[in-house]
Length: 260
Image (cartoon, rainbow, N blue to C red; front, side):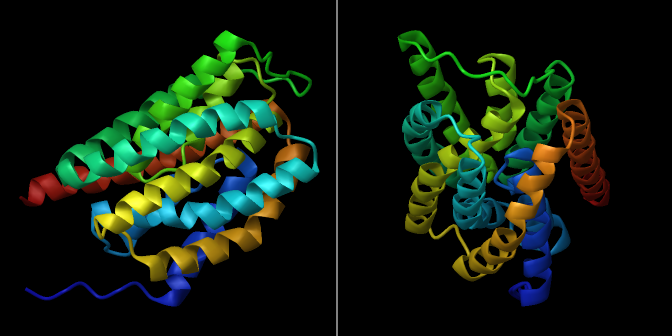
């Protein structure tokens, strides 16, 4: 049995460019494009793709969070609460990733995207909205971070596609603050998840570095466009992007089952 060839530098860099633009625009880590691109388009094992994506999200989230913070679009208290939960959750998620079958991960990822797509049409963010921090709110933010961390570790996503809609819908955040706080939250989450994946040899650091570098270059452009575009159309674009990703994954999964 031959070992699959490692993806080339140029394809990995292009994945990073696309992930960076989407990270800045939607406040996500880019895992929703990195994982399918690595697994479906570049032939990487699904589990390795998920672990590599978590590592690539680290530099992306640092640059993205910095860009949003400079513009004043980060809720630092909310981000710290989310980060406290995601650090623990990411460890559990990376552990589950090594135990779960690949098929379950793929179907779980698709079901997860479907839920996010539907939720986006129920969120109408306002640019002036802010999170009202109380003791209860803080506890719920930590819980949200924990659940997000578990999903991040299993699915290889930074957690933004979970956190951004939740911050807008349940915590009353504006879209820009939700995106900036989400990116800041991902920094410790990515570190935690990557450490867990390294212990289990479930990450390709070379691929993660190339994807992460490509993403870093383009994140600021995406964040500037996010501030310019109307919140409703930003949500609509995000949902359509996720529909495309879900359709691609579902089609390939069904073809794979037929061939079996």
